[in-house]
Image 1 (cartoon, each protein chain N blue to C red):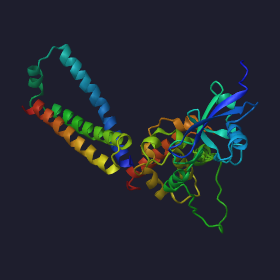
Image 2 (cartoon, rainbow over the protein chains, first blue to last red; image 1 turned 180 degrees about the vertical axis):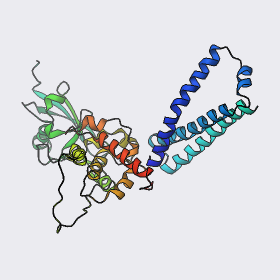
Image 3 (cartoon, each protein chain N blue to C red; image 1 turned 135 degrees about the vertical axis):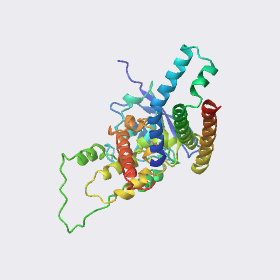
Image 4 (tube, rainbow over the protein chains, first blue to last red; image 1 turned 90 degrees about the vertical axis):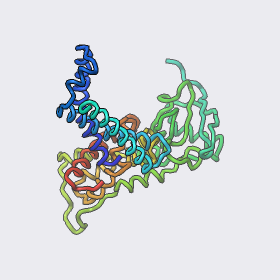
Length: 109
Length: 243
């Protein structure tokens, strides 16, 4: 792993610490309050705050996970560095698309 | 305390990469080292056995082998410490090509030293006065902690990351680079930090600390690598190196 990828992975990890904690707290809150999907969507619909929160979260996850998977592929698979890099970019794009689709569904639909 | 067995059952790796272990019976002696055992086999049982040693006192770093699954300097490893029920299994160092029997090819190990810019780059000529380095200066203390490496290859053989990633420079080369990064007389840190910050450099280390656990001189290459991570990350953020 180069210093550039190292810093991106560490920075996104640091960023995700509060995001994960807030995300878990939200899950606990929603289940304790016995909120339905409709209740949740009524609160998130049109909310710029939730869109920003989960938008940044999805971006951080996509970058962090793809760099981690790139490392795993480099060390544990016969793929060369370059091929592992392309696989990781593809994974990052898939994660970002799935994540942003979920965020759009949460906020706009 | 039970009496040690009169004979040791010693399995030695014979041949190249496609070789096998062969078992020999070696008399057990007081204060016997693993290198003594290997030498006994070569001198009294099979003179075709190949292995490497030089100083026999833990200075040259040439006699490292895998002893009962762990890389060790054999000249300073007493049989009493490692023989499991009077049995020893001795092979060449892991993570390196086998030349023959117990001799591993150290070329990749030293090539990575070169890749990590482990060579001193002088900043002055011999015509200038000798540099004055304070022993209590922070860089000198950092260099001192890592300087006693004898290049035995034990850390390289113990490293999981080297095993998984053949392009990884390894603990010894990075430890050496860290001593030079802290050498105030050296002028090669730009190229050195770029080399250790590239793919396969210090940021590939998982900090498993096998190098530290196995180093016969109790050095801590993991700490040296952590220092390189900090120094090269800071240089990258300041725009001083491209990676």
